[in-house]
Image (cartoon, rainbow, N blue to C red; front, side):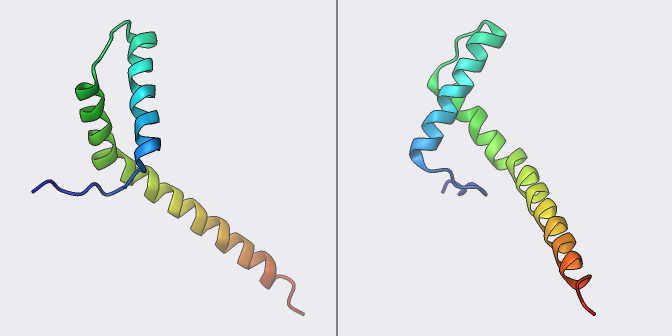
Length: 77
């Protein structure tokens, strides 16, 4: 049974990401990679790296909201 990724990407967006990976390899590395290699790389990033970026975004949003609450509380008389 295949493990479900921590972050689910819609099919259309996933296809765009795979194309971007292949384009990056072509332009930056001078190497053409196939669909399988791009899929494996995207799956690795989605499973192992993306949750850290997601968590950072959640932390940033929490910090921002706390600052906004402090601004509102400063209006108290």
